[in-house]
Image (cartoon, rainbow, N blue to C red):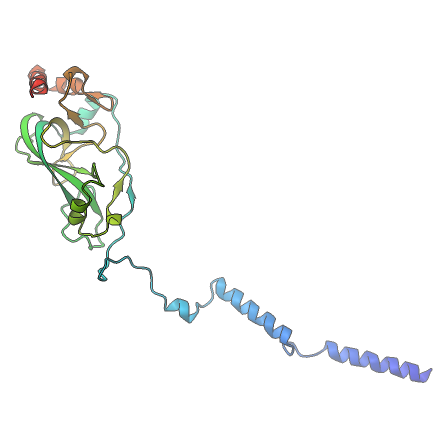
Length: 252
């Protein structure tokens, strides 16, 4: 009986010694510690050397020239007017003219000057179509000597892609800005009445893309631009103004 009790006591002592082994002495404990360190790095610990040496992505032209990445889509906020009187209050002039040419230019933002260096990261380039015009009659404002009118965007981006890329100083069409909303179709050689403004820009511009372009074609009483009838707008400047518009509207 004594031998049995001694044997059981020895077995208990051996079991107790195994349970009190030093932490980290087994391979399993070392593996768990490694997993814990990896999780700490992933949650914001010190980055690995490989990550620290990885450069930021840079968009470049062929040859290594760094270029700014233009936003692929630009939303131009614009008001909408229900009445010609409201549009008249917002604009600076109304011009009857013939369009004689079309080109492209990049301005610094919506009201800045011409950008000669599109790599200047302190400014925001904005592509404009620039129409050459021959003024015929000015019904409001002092725009009789205007030779150019600008408007953001491009009516036919795909057709004129080479010329637009040259104006932007890029060789990849992906850098050409895309503008949301309707772009007016303005044709060279045709007559138009434009609602114009120079209030916030150093150059005269077509005030709105949606309500400022009136082609002189068809019945003058029916010419309208997104709810604004040309007759209602021109009537604000007198009967002679309307008679002039009707005369040129019927001219070949």
